[in-house]
Amino acid sequence: MAVRQLLNSIRKITPADAIIALSVAALFAYSLLFIESQISLIENEIISLFAIAIIVCVATVFRRTHAHISAGIVYFGFLSRYLLLPALILPFDLVILFSLYAVTVYGEKAARIVALIGALFFGFLLTFPVIPTNQILESILDFVLIESIVIATFSVAMLRYIQLQRYQELLERNEQVLRDSERDSEIAVIEERTRIAREMHDIVAHTLSVVIAQADGGRYAAKSNPEVAQRALETISEMSRAALGDIRSIIGVLRDPNESHSPLKPQPVDDDLDQLVQKVRDSGVNISYLRLGTAFPLPVGLGNALYRICQEALTNSLKHAGPHAQITVILKWSSVAITLEILDDGRGAATPDDGKGHGVIGMRERAALFGGTVEAGPRPEGGFRVRTLIPVNSSRGMSNDGN
Image (tube, rainbow, N blue to C red):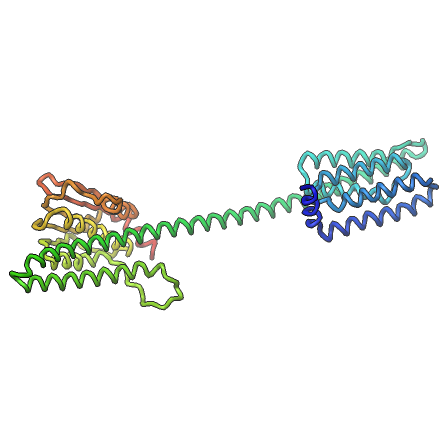
C-alpha cells in the first residue's frame, strides 16, 4: 500500500517541481564555493552538508503533493544547516522561501501560519547569531531585508492561493451547473414519459370504449338490420385507424431524429371538440354539444388539455353511464374563465375513475398546469358531471409568454 502511494506521488511530480529541486541543488553547489572562500570545512561537516542538501532536494520535489511533510523536512534541514554553520548566510538558505511559498499555496491554514512564523524566526537567527558592537546597524538592515523578502514571498503565495481557490470554485460551479442540467434533462424525460402515458391512455381508452359500444350494437343488429351492423363496422374501422395514427404520432417523438418518417400529427386543440363529439355521436351515443360565449385564441397546450379532459370524461361516460344515457358537452367562454362541462344522466355515478391514476387525477393535472381546477362527481338528479374551470388571465398570460 505504501509503495502504491509513493508511486502515485511520483506520477504527480511536474517538470516545475523537478526544475525547482535542481535549482536547490545548484544553490547548494554555489554555497559550497561560498563557504570555501570564507572558512575551511572538515570532512564530517562536508558530509553533513551533502546529506542535508540531498534530503532537502528530495523533499522539494514533493512540495505540492505533500506540502506539509515537505515543508517540515526543509525547515528541519535549514535548522540543521544553521546549527552546523551559524555565522554564515548562504545562497542555499533561499530554499526556505520555496518551501514557504509551497506550503502557503497548497497547505492548510494552520500550516501556512506556522510556516510564516518559522521563516520569520529563521530570518532572525541568520541576522542575529552573535552581534558585535560595531555590526548592530548592519545586522538590523540585514534583518529588515530578509524579513521583507519573507513577507513578500508569503504575500505572492497568498495571491496565488486565492487565484487557485477561485479557479476551483469556478470548476465546482461549472460541475454543479452540469449536474443541474443533467437533472433537469432527467426530469424533462420523466415528464415527457408521463405525458406520453397520459396521451396513450386517453386515446386507447376512448377508442376502445367506442369500439366496444359499436361492436355490441353491431352484433345485436347483424341479423335484423345489416345496414346498422355495416355502419358500426365502418365506425370501428375509422376510429381504430384514427387511434393508430394518434399513437404513431405520440410514439414518433421517441424515434431517432435522423430516422426518416412522416411528419408528426399536431396535437388536438379545443376546436377539435366538434370532431370528438361527432365521432361519439356516430357510434350511436345520444350526445349533444353546446358552445356559449365568444371564443378567443388559446395556447396549443391549453387547447390540448381541454380536448383530452373532454375525451377522458366521455370515455368514462361511455364505460359507466350505460347504453341509453344522454351525454351533454358544454363549452362556455367568458371574460373570467373557460368552463368545460361533461354531463350524463346514466348509472355510472358510483365509478367516477378507472382506478389506474389516469382518470380524474389526470384531468386535474392537465387543468392545474394552466391554473385551473376539475370537479368530478355524481349529480343530485342522477348521473355524473365533470366540470373544468380555467381562469382566463392564466390562459391568456401563458399564450402571450409563448408568443
